[in-house]
Amino acid sequence: MQLNFIGNAAQVSSSGQTIPMLDPSDGQVFDHIQRSNAKDIDHAVRAARQCFDTVWGKTPAAERGRLLMRLSMRVAQGVDELTVLEQRDCGKPTRQARADAVALARYFEFYAGACDKLHGDTIPYLDGYSVLTWREPHGVTGHVIPWNYPMQIFGRSIGGSLAAGNACVVKPAEDACLSLIRVAQMAAEVGFPAGALNIVTGYGHEVGDALARHAGIDHISFTGSPSVGTLIQQVAAQRHCPVTLELGGKSPQIVFADADLDAALPAIINAIVQNAGQTCSAGSRLLVEQTIYEPLLERLGAMFENLRAGPASMDLDLGPLIRQSQQQRVWDFLSDAQADSIPMVAKGSVVDEAPETGFYQAPTLLRDVPVQHRLAQQEIFGPVLCAMAFRDEDHAVELANATPFGLVAGVWTADGARQFRMARRLRSGQVFINNYGAGGGVELPFGGVKSSGYGREKGIEALQGFTTLKTVAIKHG
Ligand code: NAD
View 1: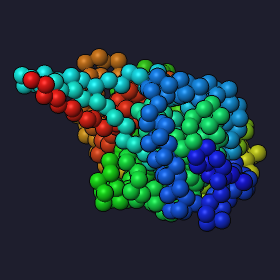
View 2: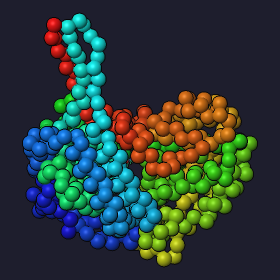
View 3: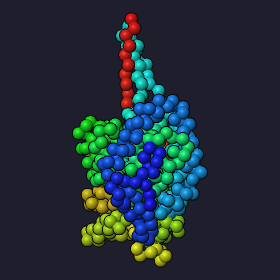
View 4: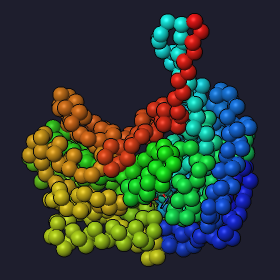
């Protein structure tokens, strides 16, 4: 049984209720979390406020950095333990769960070094005046985390916020939160003061909503679906609380005829099968120059047929989807494809060892998907890649920009001038050219445009969002 973590202490929820946790690999209950409510959120916000007012808000930046560095080292030491938790909770193959734990340690390392490098400005003004700006923490920040990359999103969100000097209240997703509870315990172990980092678990419409509504929350960082992002904005708007929204995507991989396909194809596959396609930045649309459309699909199709889904512990190309409703969602999209005669190029397999009670979906490659079809417009959030052909650069840009989203775009071409033209014309928070998010990119600001959200997390840029600017004008004659 997992408990909330408030003020450096394990706490049961005031509701006395719990939520069962299912292992996506076999669909069986393996643990329970607290079904918290508004009272628990209030308790956590008070603990965070107390900490901010008395200790954390007075802790020198260099000391915050040392604590974050200690946490980074503690997480690095606990990578094996966190890998097992994440694997069980999310159904991630071992290598992917491990990569997330390593990335978490890296986030804390990065933000440890950033704490004491957050400077203000001095501004020339009227004679007899001195004007300066201070970057100040908001106070208490709320963080709503999705289930697809719990550790990575937690790392980038609270890493930046703690570095900026805020105390944090975190609401993990009800489907996957064990690793985050464990990391909060590690933070207490390495010396974070009680209340600096609090975890309250439960359902979104109960505890997530209560967090967004709480008057003691000074900033909300939300990562999740566009529809819940809208609700959070509406609630936060009632009290003019600033929000950072990291929402979904329908990211295109754009392949020109001069691309290095040996480099492109494995990256294109990885971008749709990683975490079984349940990735905000999944490269879920494949736009291919007409002249190489047929040979590319033939080659990619052969690669797709070799992909295997299976239990997380088998460490295959992909694990199961997170839950049955997500599996059903993917099936619904695939039945639409069938009903509308969208051709399937290839399908991978689910291994025989996969329990029937697990939530598996074989990777699937579809072709000639009309740009306005819902398969090409909406997040499927499964291992389904939708291919379409383009005539020329203008047509590629038109197709790439023709969804409500704007998170990531991948461009594969050897033509240097075209690389820059494409990067300029794509309406997207990130453009990756001849790569697709290699190296984790902890240092690189990340976020979206259009329905993919606004504000940036990751990198030094995130610290702007986790602080507010105060201008101080002094008349001294
Ligand atoms: P979701 O929106 O269903 O849930 C996200 C979080 O919001 C969960 O913790 C959930 O409990 C909470 N929540 C649900 N209803 C709420 C409410 N009424 N008030 C407050 N909180 C509420 O999303 P999900 O299914 O967990 O995650 C998948 C979505 O997240 C996809 O759309 C994906 O693209 C997006 N995502 C975006 C990024 C990014 O960086 N842009 C990263 C990861 C995931």
